[in-house]
Length: 307
Image (cartoon, rainbow, N blue to C red; front, side, top):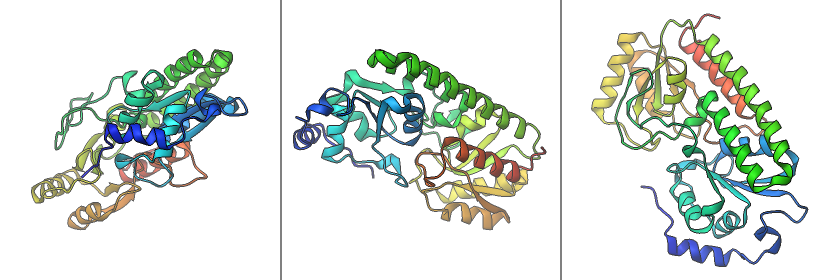
């Protein structure tokens, strides 16, 4: 079960973190770079690409760590308090939400507030029903390159307000990034236009935005939380749908055990493959674009798409 950082502990953590650091309290490093704290990898990627060499970016979720259950150390809470801007996605990591609400509310940039989010469960933009409706909103918005480009533009605007001296550079780099994301969107649209199957069977429902953008039907074995255990009834229902649709590939994600996906795959005679939700970066040599193109290749193969 997720543990939440209590507000009283957050206040204590700031005190323990040495919040009297004069270089950090200005929102800039000792060498004059604008300080940005990000909640997890996709937001780190945006901040680094848009900020360029005039910013210093600290990511609260370490590489290879599962971000859903992040708990902040006293030092990390101090970093949130001292940053010039804290970039997060409200509702995804409760400890980060609480730290920003208490220590950096006027310096928070909430990516969830600048683009429309899909419901966690219920129908997506194409009318497909998501299994195991959970209520609330689906946070995995970065898996849609079009939405991510919108977030990039809004982040550049906010950075320009916080650091006017470099506003033009933020805008220019955000436009260049948006052009790359448009190219990626075209690659996905072309690559997934003609496929033998459009059912995307995944270990958990992290891919609603990708499915909605490219007219796929996501079938999640579990819901939004990767920690959830599917019921026997849910496993049976997914296996039945996989057989009926001729599914040949069951996708599981990085950072989470493939055991559930393996169970369904054995049941229906399918294989398994990785589909990375990009909540964290596993390969330090890669980035958002390399992982998304790996995802496209995995989808193209698993769904029988013609090129």
